[in-house]
Image 1 (tube, rainbow, N blue to C red):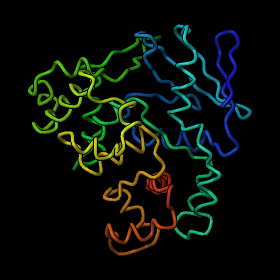
Image 2: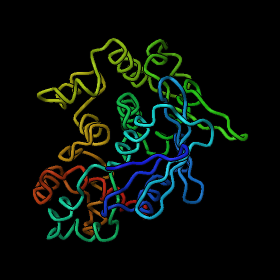
Image 3: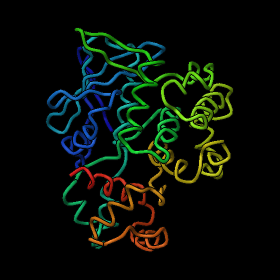
Image 4: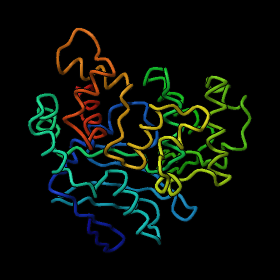
Length: 297
């Protein structure tokens, strides 16, 4: 995507297949979300740029995302552009996905309903992994509660005009914790071990996005870590590395969405999902994401 900068304001041209409204609808799915704030049609989010916390205000007008900086303007604006492009998957050619599922009776109605919805990613690998671990075998609401607790306990914040804006804790901070530090936040012992373990893998240089990008089998490399099973690995490949063929086939939300859309009386089996997904080959991640979106109606 092309971008321009004038007077400290960045503008990013977006593809034709882009809907800011649909992206906002997904970003607003939980009132417990702490890592971004939506005020009318503006998204506020903090990211770290050269070890400084920068608050972005993102809005949309005339096929452009407009990024303003209510606090301080970063010197490295390229980092901001790259983050937003990754967060909203702006470099993906969605027309290919839409063509691929144009004859699919399950997906095509969702494409028409949510046209322009982009994969809302998690660009930071540590955040993606630990968020996925938090969400294992609990309700989504409680997962958000755990995230809020770990962020407010160990993350950094900006206070601007009496409003708090939070950044996710760094792996360096979490790597130094003890199990009991997370147990106090109602993490199970196992989840506390897994989260701290992942932090140490990253801090000690054994795990990174670059390592996964160049791995022959990135899913298997993730599964070799304690606490990471096939569902978590596929979720991270889908949301962090933006792999369009990642398929968290065991996801309960995916199963519920298919059951709802097809008006089945019971959830599909994993084998039934794999049969359905033959029509989505190469685009399983986007198919999953659009099915998840259908649950928020």
